[in-house]
Amino acid sequence: MKFLLITPLAEKSLLGKDFYFRLPPLGPLRLAALTPPDWEVKIVDEKVETLDLEQDADLVGITVMTPAANRAYKIARSFRERGIKVIMGGMHASNVPDEALQHCDSILIGEAEDIWEGALEDFKKSQLKRVYKRPNGFPSIAGRPLSNWNHYQGKGYLPVHFIETTRGCPYNCDFCSVTNIFGGQFRTRPVDEVEQEIKGLKPFEGRFILKNVVFFVDDNIYGNKRHTKELLTRIIPYNLKWLGQSSVNISKNDEILSLCKKSGCMGLAIGFETLSSENLKDVKKSVNNPQYYIDAIKKIHDYGIGISGNFMFGFDEDDEGVFDRTLEFVLKAKLDSCYFSIVTPYPGTGYYTKLLEEGRLIDNDWSNYNTNHVVHKPKLMSPEKLFEGFNYALKECWSYSSIIKRLWGNGTYKNYWYPMNFGFKRSIHNLIK
Image (cartoon, rainbow, N blue to C red):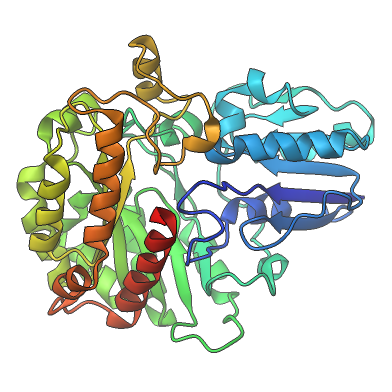
């Protein structure tokens, strides 16, 4: 039987089709790996290829993220009009199941492990249920089949392999969906299995400066210190170049930072979010302390590890001066890169509930829930000023002079950070234009 798995395009998003760095999504590969061998799986990612709505399939699966929800519903309608069953999953479908069910035959809420194979068996028996959801708890991520990267051959992605070693997050920040969907504890994957996956990776074809790059998709690579220490120690012999995401607290652990350097870490994405302690308190991210940001960044840089700092604009304590304050900080800290976004209240988060109850949501078009549009009323500036300031910050941060000032003398991995900055600059130019 033929299973067509689709990742719809978020057309208005900075990370959409015109984004310079086309990265391979891990979710579809995981679902394909969980699919029994008697199914023929085809994956289509609209970010890198055209979707043929007339193609043949026995069952269609659509991964629904909020900024691509409208597109997902349109795709589903096209296949259902031809009598093809559609099942949806992903963050958006899981958080607004009643809405999603208006556009598909079935939804899978939460994680696919342990329930996906049952859904496929039900489909074969013409007994597909409307909703599939684990009765309680979260599945183990141990003992799962490895991703088959052959599904992505020839699709034009950047040469990066994505690997998961933990899942879940205990912080439960108001603006984030991770804890709601993946739980409030770090579930770890056996390091033996991670090592086995790394051993089996094949270098990408073509002429690339970096051939063996791995991105660890864990929301916090530093979340379980014992697991992190074992993992980094074990991967040292493989001469990887790797990237990951971490809390700023990793700066307090010299042993882990040393292992990061020895194991080939080029950089970490860190969610600083804001320079305001009041904002952090409001959104329940008390793990961060802006007073120590500069020292933490310097400490991580001392180990030759680059930092992509993430900041959001539009929190309740943000006034019109927040953009210049943040730009000044980014230059002073010499961040290797940064990702600016507009605070976006995604359904299923505490932030969405708060703004809904306060009557501050001003846009019901899901395609604008993409972190580069304003969909709520800020407290200390107008939506127009927030949008203008966001675009101003993007242009200033990614100017040639800013890139040189930030990267000059950092001692981090220039073969990655310079191309990354100039590629991002091009995407920012296209977005603003």
